[in-house]
Image (cartoon, rainbow, N blue to C red):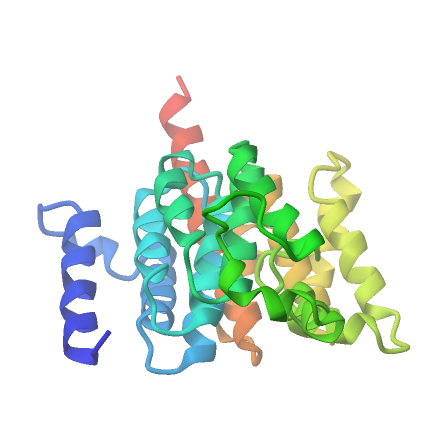
Length: 280
């Protein structure tokens, strides 16, 4: 898609997901507003890596119409890395309404994008469509006359290419939403930090207050994978009191940490507002 057209679509999307009434001046400098500004800039960046990471971070935002709109839009990005990230994010945010668009993505020309869409459809319990893809990946032959990825059958018969496809897109086999291939590569080094990152991820739903403190400490870890994993765990805990601990990571030196922090702030701010609204 050409840049002028992409920019036009960007403006239309912004208009579609932002309320029509003018925003109050007091809202302009809120953490949520600045977080969306950070993510939006990444998602519509000319830089492929920024677009990929920004879109992937949207996976933290469940039940958010704006995040779903952005991810669906990114399914048509000219770069397969971004399309894969978009398909992954829609599954992670449990975007049931996006199932038809994910099914359409199964016809993508790039196998990694097809795999990402199939993985998300499986998460969304649209398993029949995903099974067709997995069958073709396993056997290298069509399951039916309208094989989804049969045109790339030679690629599927090449073990080296299959290995590359299976891991390079970070489509859900690694327990992180916004880290992907970089995490996989680091995990295969003699480095204890990835193990700690996995531990942080698995602690997301531990109710022990001591765990909250440990995750907050990990947000400032020297290793970016640990920082990102801790931020994602905090987002999933839904404890809005930890919001002030995450917001400073908007300025983290690693982009994946910044984008995960932005998504976490949006999610925690939303949960804080809902809790306040329910209060007597």
